[in-house]
Length: 501
Image (cartoon, rainbow, N blue to C red; front, side, top):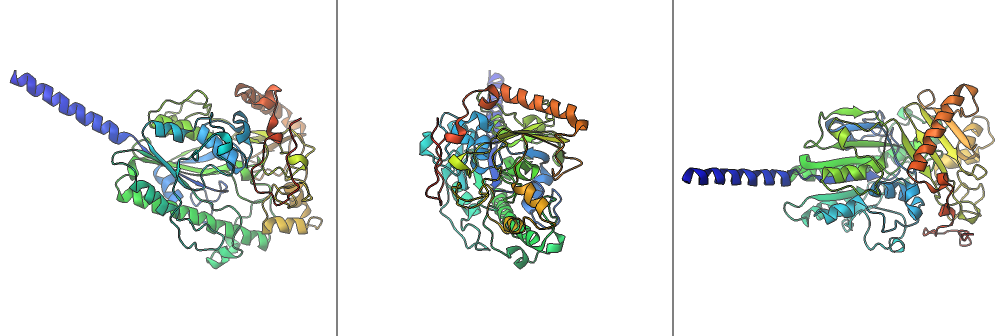
């Protein structure tokens, strides 16, 4: 009898240890997202000037993704896709910036909260737009933590102390409770302090000027100013990871570093080219990643993050999330074919008469980028005059910057017109680029007979994906994005969205 009791006691103790281990294995999540950063601009991705020790560490100790793409190269829609695990054409009003994210679309943050996670965010969470219009009372990224401030190194930067706000969040997490935190900086969003890069000691001669810009001192200096903003973001992650390390929580935390879309420059942000859609992504999770230190070259969308977080937390992924979890990649047992990513645009700031957008869809493969522009008669960067822009600036889809001004002021001069046209001119209904031979996507091959078969194949693949995921435009249904309310600031007081016909 005593022997049997001892055996039962031994089994009970063992079971308690198993339960404790399972509880300890429930991962925390620290999701770090910059605001407007292209893939190339981290140390681990090859930039020789910008210093990104946090990203480089996460890439070195986890997985670095070389072909990660946002779902939309504009803030609100991209963040909506990340949170919901769905492409923007499935999200109604959330397909537009300065809109809302209807409550019926479930987010990974609220599902994790229902499963017992503490959730919160600092800086820029889901934004910009209005929550109440979608029936929400709390930011979809979680509870806000933005009370702590600092004196930023440059005037252009936010005074929010993102890392300290993360510490404040951790202080209110119950012992043993898993957490999911969104650390979203406002950097490197425009504007920048002019000359900040040079003041920091950076050498303009070492800057790699993207091929869609002229190699000009103004552009080099503008890029340096952008770099110091990226470095501010990265330093916040350095501090946040140090906090986790001190608390003994780092190795059981999924640390993700990425950006919502590409750099705030012409032919980048708010465009479907790589400079606007190709983003940095690295994931560190020692307790969950198999064979850390890998580079993954498959194509993914950032919407894949939502089902990944839910699967890692052993929370059921809702059927409305059509994105593909990255758990197979993390476990080094990828079964999903990852040979394409899909990108879309609807309305950015709507700098056209009636507040209309520039609807377009794209498929990106390892070698090609195919773009379908659904309204090619419209100006892709917004109208040349400011009359039809909420921001009351010409080509208002492109943020004001020294680089933009340089191109506009020299539009008809030799050495500049080509770059001006790339940034601002109208585009054909179809575009095709061989990205391995033409990484800047400067030469449109859509009318080259040599690539006719490839173009047809990609167009068909894009259409099949859009139909399968129920894009209203692909199905010939009502597509009301031009007519949804616009909740952004309107410097042009006469600007308004056309009412739906």
